[in-house]
Amino acid sequence: MKVKQSQYYVAFDSAGNIAGFYVDTIHGDAIPETAIPITQEQWETYSAAPHLYKLDGDMIREKTTEEIEDELAQQPPLPPSMEQRLNAVEDMLLGILLGGV
Image 1 (cartoon, helix red, strand yellow):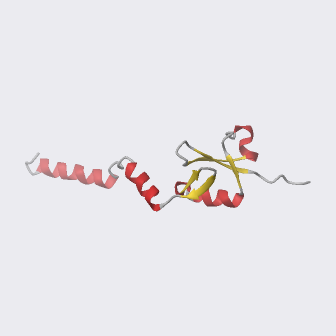
Image 2 (cartoon, one colour):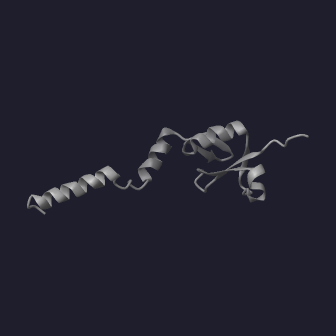
Image 3 (cartoon, one colour):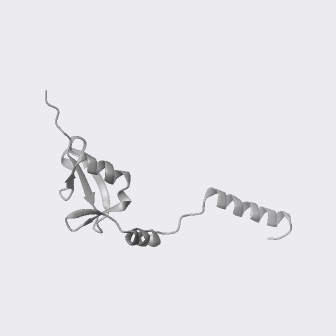
């Protein structure tokens, strides 16, 4: 009995960023028509760091340092960490206890 080789696919959003990965043996008919067939090796590479790749015309390429920096600069700031929040609460409580706030 011959085992069918899986076909891998990658889909992109309107900006050319990777939006998802698909495998025909798992996703069947749910693979978007715009998804591009790729090899297993390409899937391993792209899925390990999808934020580093983009579709440029009909070619998948690595993003430039400038592109990555621009994307990072456009992201909203991260919320304060648990440690930062606890420190703020601790400072506020100390202020209350010491007759401040």
